[in-house]
Length: 250
Image (cartoon, rainbow, N blue to C red):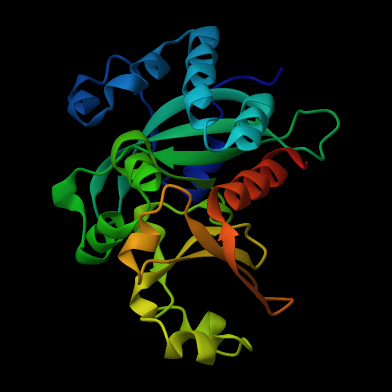
């Protein structure tokens, strides 16, 4: 198995000054979620066992994604890095094998950041969390802030990476469905919450509060390359399938 604590792509794509977080970093503890404490352990088995426990909870809504993440993750640990907007932040790093690497020696990293304190949220992020489906809001506020490739594409967006359809006019403006859709919806309340990194994205329409707060929320699946638009898709199923394929290839 490859060495643990692979920080190469963390330093390349996130922050060159990022450091491994251990129990010795007492100054970071106030910002560390209590349920992330086991990831500070120097013991690889302890960290992986805790990940398995966390993923069992996530598996209630994303069963295939939870299985794929556990299957492909070779190590999980915490880092402290400098965020351009929020200053020092803590993130959980997953060193994962690539599904198309038969030898399993080439690792890449996925990242989920620690939840942001309420006072650090901007107005767009607050509006999103106030209107979003309950379980998604809980994920962001209590569990983790996004789950995505550290390379900058693919996965559930962290709050700081969320964009509304109003901001994405250049990306979507030429799509066949765009003009008709925004004629009946406030584009500032339609968020791109998930991307596969290749132009297939999930939009979440929060214009209708009762519908947005549904326990079984629906999303809009768009494919920029194929110019397709599929509304009323079961959001958790979409995220589950797309994450599983992205992580494990199946």
